[in-house]
Image 1 (cartoon, helix red, strand yellow):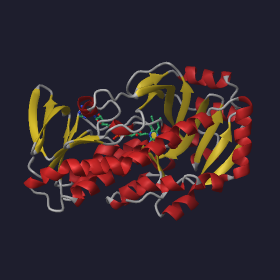
Image 2 (tube, protein in one colour):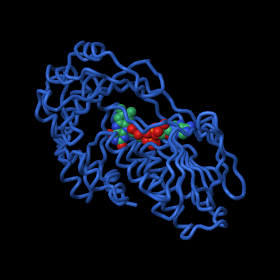
Image 3 (cartoon, helix red, strand yellow):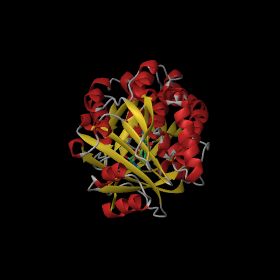
Image 4 (tube, helix red, strand yellow):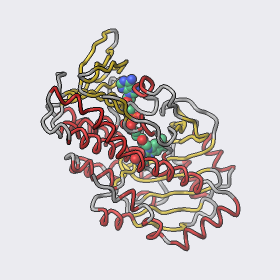
Length: 403
Ligand SMILES: Cc1cc2nc3c(=O)[nH]c(=O)nc-3n(C[C@H](O)[C@H](O)[C@H](O)COP(=O)(O)OP(=O)(O)OC[C@H]3O[C@@H](n4cnc5c(N)ncnc54)[C@H](O)[C@@H]3O)c2cc1C
């Protein structure tokens, strides 16, 4: 299916699938190379704020996602010491103002909705079990080398988009010096049946528990049947990937030793099966495009998850990338190869400052959530004095983004 209007996307994660739909909607043919034989997502949730949900709705995914997502009423910030709610941020009002929903969703639900839309699209060829290996640039664009088991193939394309995650092979070839850094923190992730939880409010909204050197995020997914838990703790375990099992006794003991309130310990104790994910991040800024190749999502800017915006930024990237390529390729022809590098540069330019600001926000949030002693007390008082609505209004610049 390759030809002058073809774009190869390496990686069928949230970023790669969204980018493929956005590019196809602008008249491109897309080949997606995905090394996994099947698209599976570990049992974990995702918060999708209005800036991201709006893009997905515009791509025609609204109905499919609304059936699976939960619309949380609020984010409640909880004290790990007292077990009390410190402040409540009313998400419904933020979503109404932004004109798009705030969703919490199982990753597998988002991924399967994207996959179904991709598979149904006549201009997209999703190749599972197909590894991106290398590429060569030339005047007509790029030639992309791929491998399925022992068979190697090459594909000519107008552009190559590296949406292959934080350990990106495309980035490795393009900018070998750009490397993710380990944060010294790991995420423990698990799900539990909602009816097994003692606290009703953990089934309807997002809870953010802040404690010394750690925090815990809890929210419903899968139409409210499951509750997703993410516990962030310091550690020097720094393996790649996100499906390493974690011993429930280990995480329970940590939260007990740190003096977390009973209510929080009961939430942790309700999960029988945990996965661990070492948190790596790319440095801010960096270069995301060279010639007819560009990076998108975690490949470009993998970030700490404390602003809940990594996937959101990948989704925004996808919309902007398609717009930049589409603007100069209203009716793509062979000659358009000449303008691709400039379009990709425009894309990177359009995204860099906003993404760097979100990366900073995520780091800052992590520090605030993990404060100890008098600083933690001051934080709690300041949050209460400010109140939920004003705290939430500080996110307006994130949520109100539009293409
Ligand atoms: C604990 C935690 C909580 C989070 N919570 C949120 C949240 O609430 N909201 C939010 O917006 N974000 C959140 N994130 C961030 C979010 O998960 C990521 O930013 C997002 O999944 C990145 O998507 P991506 O498509 O760029 O990369 P990935 O999802 O990593 O996808 C990359 C794809 O490329 C494939 N691939 C890799 N190499 C190759 C190759 N050589 N050839 C072919 N295919 C290849 C992989 O198999 C994979 O399918 C969280 C992250 C963590 C760790």
